[in-house]
Length: 252
Image 1 (cartoon, one colour):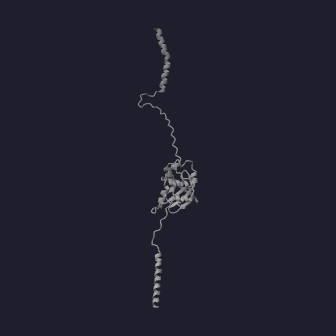
Image 2 (cartoon, helix red, strand yellow):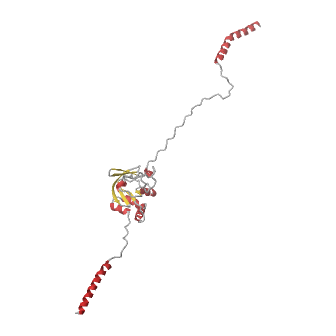
Image 3 (cartoon, one colour):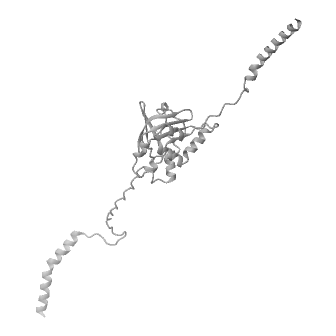
């Protein structure tokens, strides 16, 4: 009887001990680091959205797409981007051969002209300052200026060559905003009409300069009254001189 009484309390203690250590062993290691965020792939986002085949091809061939994904995946960088993505219909509306006539560098600049190195939400478009600076660089007139205007809920993008409308947002977060546009954004530096050369000026006509007598000339002005008097005297005395001459001859 005494032996059974000792076994029962010991069993209870063992059960209580096991119940206490069970939660401890079931817990995972404290403070485990969170899984890293998946890298942002710009071309994958556009492929999922559809109708951006030509723009995706340009992003890949120019390596701009890889550069964007690399910068967006850098956890230490706060760099964000806004991309205006033209649809396949937008590229189809270009004049035939437009892309083929561009060099590889110009194709890269064309893609970069659709990218702004900061994140702009739809509500911020109404308060931003124009012109916007793109990845293509210089915003001077005749180079790569990009202007955004709003009218109500409508957002328009102008380049000096074309005017495009923002149709909808494909994605928008703290590091990346992609907007669908209905026109390919053509920069002035590549597609602008060059200013006509100034017309040559008409030759200047030479104005004749009246000649003047040299200074210190000894010629004195002729008095017209003296000339008339001399002429009158010569004409008046001429007959008498002739008569006197004839008379002298006859007398001889």
